[in-house]
Length: 133
Ligand SMILES: [Zn+2]
Ligand SMILES: [Zn+2]
Image (cartoon, rainbow, N blue to C red; front, top):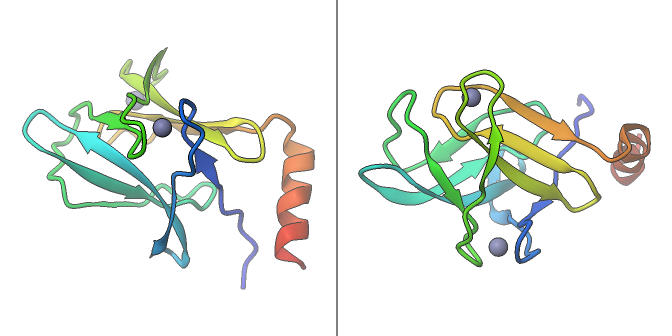
C-alpha cells in the first residue's frame, strides 16, 4: 500500500472537527461541509487525502458557479476575502488540526487548492510516525 497523508481539519471559527468518520472517502474520514448554491443547499464531503480532490455531494453543482461553504457546526461562512489566483473566486479556508491551513477555491470546476503546513518537514514527520512505516 502506498503511503499517503490524510488531513484532519477543523472550523477556523468554532474549532470543531469537520471530519466525518461515518462517511469514508477512499477509506479515510471525509471532510464534511455545508454548501449553498444559487438554487439549492446541502452537504459536501471532500476527500481528506493530501492532493486528492475528489468530493461527493447530493447538491447539483453547476460548472463555474461559486459555492458558499459554511461550517456544519456554527454555520459561519468559510469563504474568505482571499481570491483564487486562478479564477478570482473566494478561497475557502480551513484549519489543520496539527497547525497550518487548507485553502480551496469555491468555484465548481476550479482545481486550485493548497495546503499550507506551518512546518512541512515536522508535519510530514508526524504523519509518517502516526501511520507507521
Ligand atoms: Zn464552525
Ligand atoms: Zn479558482
